[in-house]
Amino acid sequence: MTKQELRNLWLKYAEEHKDILEGKAKENIEKYRKGNCKLSFKDKNGNPVVGKKVKRNQTSHDFNYGANIFMLDEFENEEYNVRYREEFKKHFNLATVPFYWDGLEPEEGKPRYDKDSPKVYRRPAPDRCVEYCNENGVLPKLHCLVYDKFIPEWLPLNDMEAMEKLYEKRFAEISERYAGKMYEIEVINELCCEWEWKFKSAISSKRDIIEWSFDLARKYFKDDVLVINEANPVKAIAERGYRNSYFMMLDAALAKGVRIDKIGIQHHAFTGANIDTDEQYQKALVTPNPHHFNPKSIFEALDKFAEFGKPLEITEITVPTFGETEEDELLQADLLDLIYTCFFGHPAVENVVYWNIPEGYAHITKIPGRIWNENRCKGGLFRHDMTPKKSAERMYEMFNKRWHTDLELTTDENGCIEFRGFYGDYKAEIDGKVSNFSIHKK
Image 1 (spheres, helix red, strand yellow):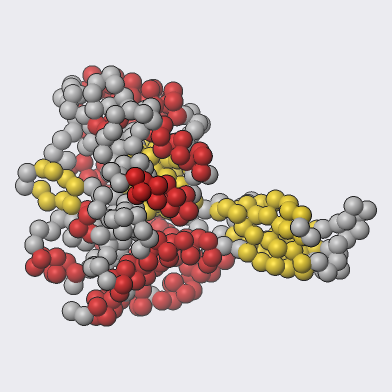
Image 2 (tube, one colour):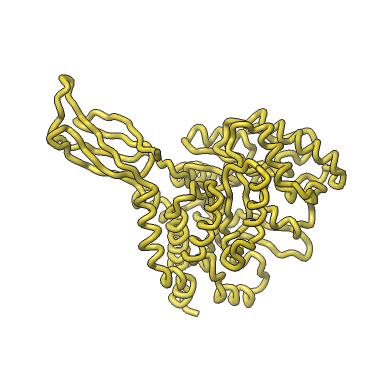
């Protein structure tokens, strides 16, 4: 298959549903991501400043777009560490901070909160991540409190009562350091995948695990935004509609009064992750999932989840690259553009998070008989040396140029300028003097 044929195949649904991308999504962006603003300029005597040029530049977005920050100071090459720190704050305003229990407390009673804690690969200490975020205008989010798959071996796995007490101790310790300091708290992760986990505790068998997890989280994180997160429901919604397990799980939990503040949705296209031979990979290339990059499927899924009346978050995103050429990078960038236009173009979506940034440092499952290597997807936005791929450049363009408001206007006879701009913070400059202002929804 030629590169052009591959491109046509993976962008097939975007072409078929161009009306959604060019119509509905763009109309929604204009309607829901922008607000009207009128500024009045007067001199020191209170007279309108007429016929003056005003430079008006957006300095931040209310919409948050991020990535996981799992490789912060994790490279052996110090030059890559410096690049990572610079590129992260340039490309993102939100960071997913790892709180996986096995990485946070590999040895009982010795949690790794402090920034100078012993290293664990892809698990930088939370204090290190939060410090970086606070210093660079990036919002940190906690991922996650209950993920009964990545838990330490020292736990009494089969003792329900002991596990409940240890989980509560974990919640209490984390809240003491981070409650009120995070953008949001992911409470429970990938529960619909629990049936296939080989390593887990008695907690996973709880019938009321969602109620229990959120009640415990609300006890210790009283004023934080609490999020539920699940793996790739767009495909399942497209195929099963309301009978999708995540939708029904949410429906039941909310009907019972569980206080879920935000619904998390993953969107990984892990093409090649579970494949061991070139022949299998080539077959996967020519049989793309019909829903991952399908605007119709994406909007239908988001519409259904929006019926719960909760904000939505795209918590984890992976877009594969199918080679090393410039054409391969361009296809990844175009696929990224497609789904981000859908997400930004849906009014219920509050923020988006890409997953792995650099190539070669993604998750690998090391279980006999199970092949899982996310590096085979080539889903990074940056190359192995932290130089940006076309996808990173495209993401920067989207949020700093396309979905960004920078104008030069002239004051009218009343000393005013009017415009419609993306929600966020701004600065206005007139005659060398700068004023700060904001446009926020509601």
